[in-house]
Image (cartoon, rainbow, N blue to C red; front, side, top):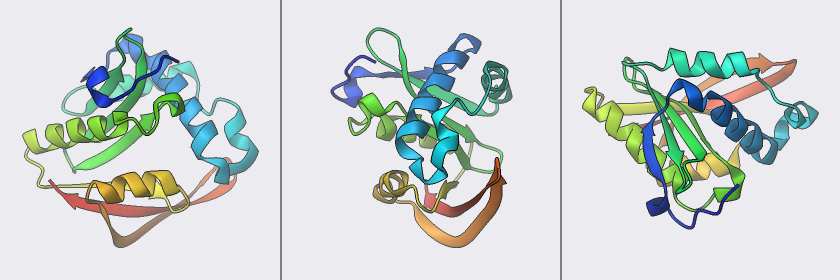
Length: 167
């Protein structure tokens, strides 16, 4: 993965079908590095290439799927938003470029897309043990609203906090 020294070195654009494998690779790398609370399950890819193609297809307008690419054109992060309800659905950055503004750049672009669609508020769910994500969202103005979503992923209980912010 190339080095990105700051958000000015990435370009944010809408994802296209050809980005699906790179989006999946960013997800897998980010999950291996950050979702240690899920244990061994994160060591192997969690989704198939067809799953990632479906994610791209499902985020055609009016939904939004943005990728951040480095100077070489490689996808180093992505974000998805659903303007119909104001949800920030996905935000992942490759761990090799984490902490360099890529996530903040994607978050700002996703917020702008939601504002342009008429949303006055954004919300998201994130695992209660995902300390890095919670810190990023807190610094962007997100606050817990008291709602919790509980589910199961491959036999592992998942507890996610709902965070909201004004746009």
